[in-house]
Image (cartoon, rainbow, N blue to C red; front, side, top):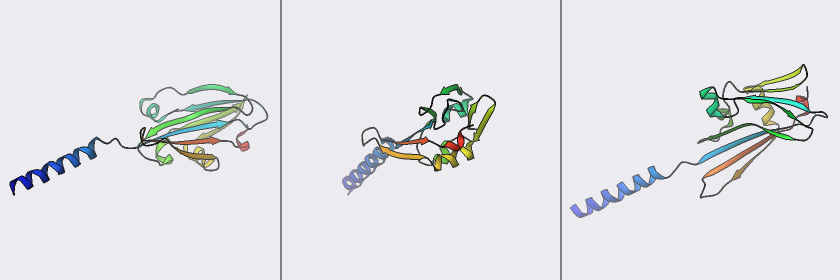
Length: 143
């Protein structure tokens, strides 16, 4: 009887340990902005990723984006799949040409992203990361 209890306890301990030591799946988010305007534009984004939101890190400095070219405007790695939770509350994307400016806060950014190409790609069992890749291509964002 004691051997059975010991064996069951050992099995339970091993099962619990294996559950704790298995890493949780991670989800990587890469969001690009593609210039569909008929002229080059300027892009700025802050924060560029979730960790910069927490520590006040760098923003994406103003960069010129030629016609039909793309630029990464946000990335993040989290343990959940909800893009609404991944994008920080203080996220801003600025699209400009000269003095003409279009400014997107988090809500507007997510609204535009909903209408854009967005795909989920599985990495596989070994790396345990799925990739969510979105590309914003919206002519209404041409300043």
